[in-house]
Image (cartoon, rainbow over all chains, first blue to last red; front, side, top):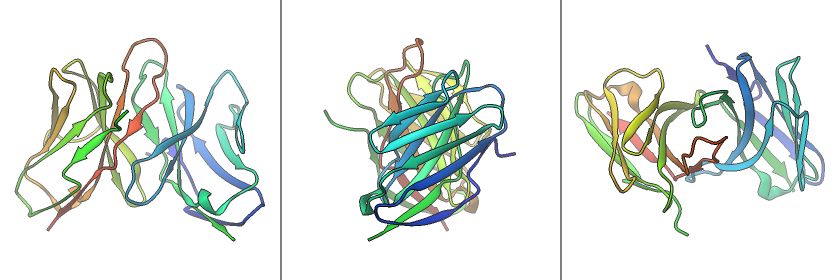
Amino acid sequence: DQQVKQNSPSLSVQEGRISILNCDYTNSMFDYFLWYKKYPAEGPTFLISISSIKDKNEDGRFTVFLNKSAKHLSLHIVPSQPGDSAVYFCAARASGSARQLTFGSGTQLTVLP
Amino acid sequence: KAGVTQTPRYLIKTRGQQVTLSCSPISGHRSVSWYQQTPGQGLQFLFEYFSETQRNKGNFPGRFSGRQFSNSRSEMNVSTLELGDSALYLCASSLGGQAGYNEQFFGPGTRLTVL
């Protein structure tokens, strides 16, 4: 039973446009959410996070939105750049499990020049 | 500051064998977590070690085990390898304190292929 789901395995976007990556979760105990980016032959790198007490967190070109009632979060990248092409993983942490992250299956983002 | 290092980077084994993977965390980090990444499954949590003690464990069979040394370096062992154990094994380190969430920094992973 996947508690964190990324239903789109891949997404292609033109350079300069907005990329929207989606993530759904089922566990009501999740209180902290993260996005990681992964290039081939490298480990995932932390991108941005959001606590369940917020509905939006912004960092430069990256914004994460959280809709708790829908158990849905999304990552917006504006404007998208070719260097953003990577696999993006959504992850969640349940309260009381500080370092046990539950990951989605990832979305391959391709930004076309 | 050096990042998380994992050795070896690639490994080929046959069914029934056992394997040991190594992870050296960032200096000063005391928590090491291990994840298995397979196509279509994302990263699945194996276990976390802090101060030489296993603190959290995921839903993996007992063939998967680990340990942590006094210098925070960690090893992961898989015995009686099965074809389905072929995966990228990732190690992540963090400060490990109890207060709030500590960001995890991942190593490049060890690619294990079981033939």
